[in-house]
Length: 353
Image (cartoon, rainbow, N blue to C red; front, top):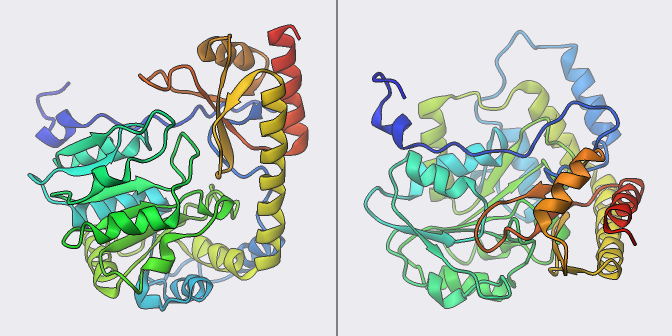
């Protein structure tokens, strides 16, 4: 710690991402990336853009991309915000809607960036314990003094909260913003975007990193009432007017326009997930009911940390969280059928089955 550090730097505890190991034969099932490449139309759009105009700044308003996203959800461009990955969008949202001195609420087992942002921006928070089955205790989110943020489906548990429960939380916080982080919603049931025209205090945050195979392009977006979007734009333009480069703008636009490819790859992942659930159960794993592109699982007799380390030595990366309440669980990204077969092969060897 340096004497030159500000109080903000001193109180910050940075987010720790999943391991990124550059190894050709590794099976990478630890960061919830899509196992399939982007749509060919995305690649074509990026290649075309590379041949022109890179010497010029990109659009600071990203109007074409916002309009394209809006069309997918029956919204206007004024109800859509885009940023450099959903993590940036979430950071801007903390600054735009949460106040220092007013505690916000989020689950005690959740996306670990939330407490990072809260500490960074000096926002107090209350971690609401999940139920024993890892579901949301909906009533405990009512009447929050500072606001609410929660992922749906939840990470790392993979569990989806029904839209009626999300709506109850929104209804019972009429004077505060409720942020629904839907990074994995395309592998689940209904999105909270249905609530946007009904309530002016709900902000839905999504990403192109998971279901649209664009983790390397870094495009996130938020949807909500025009007044909420205007607040996010004010924050963005106070930091950097050009958060998305030209390649990201055209690539993301093409990804949304190729609905057939999106549907095909998403359904492949869901089918592989369901097959994987059955296989893990046959290997004596308990698997939570996933509606994401990953599963959260624990073996009935073998500790998760042991399995994590053994798999890593065998060239298979999964995610292990050494945290109370979930320290005997593994989070496993749904890969291709071939990748999951290799995982099962290694697990079978480790378990001596």
